[in-house]
Image (cartoon, rainbow, N blue to C red):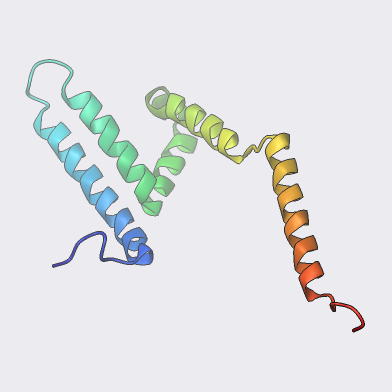
Length: 125
């Protein structure tokens, strides 16, 4: 029987993008089907499905960027907040506090010093 635990990490990573894209299209389809229902049901479904597809599809992201650059007054009110959040989120992920960097450098220096000490000859016997 095929389970997620039996698959190697590479296979899981390779299957993740198409699964995310298919589920995004499915959620968007549910949003379109729920348009006749009164109330704000379809809008969140369409937005979440669109974000899932944008995250997983390079061609959809390319079309979105092209539309955003071509008609910014139409696209920015829809996804402008998401773009601003994504840029803040990625910038926060890249930053590493100085204390963490210093601790990592100290650990690396200690490891390299230990490795050099192990490689050095024991002495003249």
